[in-house]
Length: 459
Image (tube, rainbow, N blue to C red; front, side, top):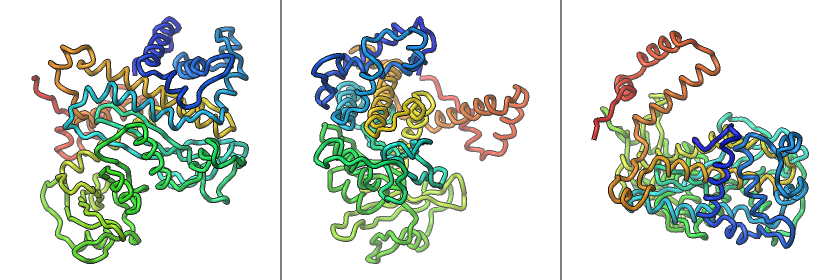
């Protein structure tokens, strides 16, 4: 992410980069399509451009005004009216922008045989001032396994295995009145503001279908939809399949969810216990065909693998494309990890949580959309810096397509992050780090030890 800068001398290059991004992807035209217009005064595109680049220079509007470095031609009130607007359709804005980036730039760099995916997941959007924040709620965080104050940021993204592009999102409040902490404002449900708040109080699986429908309406498509067990219900899987896309998802080990297996209605634990497992070094333990859904059942394949975090446990994946091999199902589902990196980047580097202190749900929605736009800008800069095929037509034909992230590269990233955390938090000296690394590696299985020191052959 070399675009991030703390040096004032680089601000002109940063502004040029943002302007190039706006020009290449018609951001002004897209914002106008989403009701982002002003009849008089400062154009909305100028306010968006300022908000987009503000995080990269490391100074808030307040600090810029205090230090005298604020050079924009609008006031603080104008800026906040823009964020609080109930008329701008931010859900459609990020969807249209993502479609322009994917269809105009990324698809030309991706071989047609590669499987593109939609990835759906949620992450906690903390709000400490929930009593005054509109629709602020107690929401269940399945990472900490407890209730937190804020929202669940349900996010739909697109990936070709190399570059992840966030498509759209919704800040989900609680659908239960008893869990609502903040005020609930009343709007006509036919208006954009009313529809936005109705979506916010939907259950996550239902909101997921709405996000997918919005993505499809702007011309986006993918071969598979990936999500984890929190969204893996037969009703949602069959609905997505009916919409023309296949699903690869982790299965919830629930006794209340049944699949039709050999003419019987059984849950996943019963199916697993009835079958003989593959032994040896196979990548999976079990593979069986089932029928999914009660009324209009569809064929699906369930693949069970060993849980690497607990060798006595197992995980199960379901795929509605029964022609895929078990290895391919596991490999494609591995692309879901990219959205975890996306959440970490938005929170740690793009100030998703701490930057906006507005109490308005509209302003929070606008803030999330702008953070997503920042990530799109960074993702495209990174792709253009790393993919030599972006340098011109000659390179496009001569250079091979970028490969999906490998197992060895993934391990290398994890080890680098572990060592950096030890240095940052525990303040270990070099000798202690060497001793820790040697002891840590000695406790790993042999195949992981070899992977950590794997050196690819030169081409």
